[in-house]
Image (cartoon, rainbow, N blue to C red):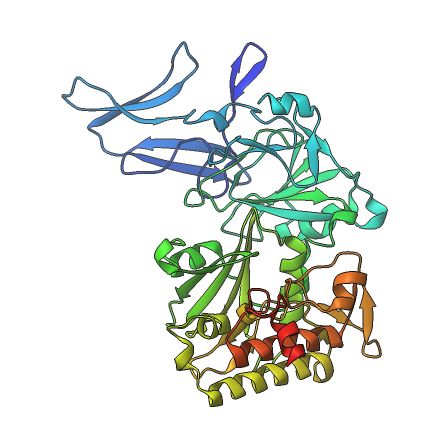
Length: 471
């Protein structure tokens, strides 16, 4: 801890079983760190490797802490690290319940579920007042804990429980109304002691993912749980961010194969050799957490040869991704609306694609465990495998209804213009018939090679549906 009078200026992170994260003190060929904690003693030791090297730790008049080394016989000192290496290492930069992210502008954000105490100060880039809960917690309604990864753990009101593992903390903290967060004290061992916080979380910052694997779990109000319980509801493999970044060459433009309302789509290849498609939720996406959760929960329970197969998902911090089997022939609109590619789809191909879509829709409406209404059937959501078999995809807007229920109503009409049935667009009523209407539009587009909304005719002003009606 570095103080100027009574004011805290800097604080290192906690020892996490491997290093002190968020301090700049990284092990290298010069430095070696050792932490000892047993029944007799507790200490942290810093060693300089090699007898010919000497070191010094200095605090200058500006408050900067530096470690320098000098080789035997040399005059000059070599700076190994500076503790305060960016603005996020200023103590409490983002105030209570705020998190500092040096890679973003502005660098301070409130934790999820929190709002600025003074919006005026935050708009003026003064974050020291911090954040307060937007929704009060209520133990009686089963508050829950949200995982936040790659962080320097916060300060103050910390309790180190040597008798509780991380699993114990996960189980006991929700029962204690004053417990605001918990984390493992040793990221390499789940059975080790856990940290527990009471009160505000101060001096929390995000670290580079290559520098930290430290997670913290902070309390969220029960009412905020609906769109955030994905990890507890699905029965799918969870991929880590590092794996997905590797398979897509760090989301390079070369591997980007599409972009839509959800975000960008990338092609990747797992270490096993299997090719995958990665849909990455964009921060500015028109679709959000609810659509992501909806797709994961629904499609994980569906299995049919004419539905795209979801292999897993990735949920880390603000990153949310869906991992599908790769479809080498892209989507239906890639072929039928492009003059140079129309000839590749014979009438036999078009017939089999139409039948595949119909079989997939019949499964959703009648044969699956849930009665699913897709609500966004369109050519770009029909993917084609290596044999040009149709696979229905994108279940972000889908809804499940009871087995004895055939119709429902919503005040939020969503979908794609040109494929939406009139009763849904006007009154918000949707049913299996809504999907059949969309299927009808699809069939007309498959037969004609023309888009419904972009269709034009010299003799009238109707769209493709109107033209078909006249015929």
